[in-house]
Length: 81
Image (cartoon, rainbow, N blue to C red; front, side):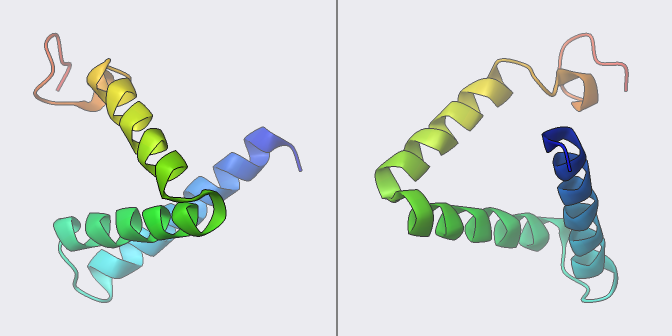
């Protein structure tokens, strides 16, 4: 399986998990996001350590602040929503 296909398959699995948390379990969007981010951070710390995990989250924040998701952000300038 190619990297692109693996990413797409993982995205589908995460989407299903998020829908299950909200729809079947009744979690709020905030709780669902908290659990996904907490799980991600814990897994990354276990694999790479806390320093690399913290740096990865900082880089993620810079990418978001840089506008990578502006096309889906209803508060972003020039938003199409």
